[in-house]
Amino acid sequence: MKTVFVTGASAGFGAAITRRFVAEGARVVAAARSADKLAALASELGEAVLPVVLDVQDAEAVTSVIGALPGEWGQVDVLVNNAGLAKGLEPAHRAQLADWDQMIATNVTGLVHVTRALLPGMVERGSGHVINIGSIAGTYPYPGGNVYGATKAFVHQFSLNLRSDLHGTGVRVTNVEPGMVGGTDFSKVRFDGDEAKAGNVYAGTTPLTAEDIAESVHWASAQPPHVNVNVIEIMPVVQSSAALQIYRES
Image (cartoon, rainbow, N blue to C red; front, side):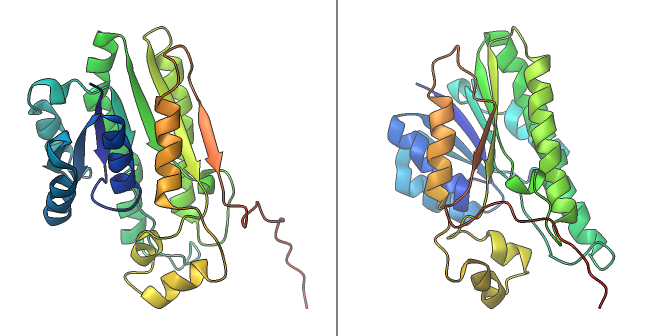
């Protein structure tokens, strides 16, 4: 049985990814900050889910929690680094430093700490798969994307460098880069709970869903062992890369 470790598993992409792997017959270590939401997910999916309360920003907790995984739950075949967030949409000169710090701590520092904790076991076993959830924001800049986009550019490059470091080990690395996805708390978190602002982001569109992203993650993991999917960039049909901005004096 395949063992999957999913961060940010209590809602959105993470919950959808957890459900997708359980449907395949895998066991999933579902890690997130919300004990209540994790308990509900575990109740829904049964013994195939091991709920683990974990804030990836807490380096000591990452080490202790992963080190304490019981038995076969600790033999992780697939790590899905999903925990991440965007905060604010202000231009850089008006952005809140606390928002920048939180994005870096979660999207970058948390991701690399979880990866570092689980990689040695994968290398020792000669197999494994690290799947990082990046974003098209790491490739295509947009106003207000400043540090969020930079963190996802880091995820992209870190994923490629992991591939280089893991050459010959049998461990695979994939970066999944979604565009606009509706039906999650992503924009609600970005706008500090302002549901009207969050709703306006998706008004009049048909965005991707969390299930679309879960399917992409599962597909990458389901390829034969000799196949490595380096990057998946996925957008809804209603979205494409925008033209360059041009400022004209009035």
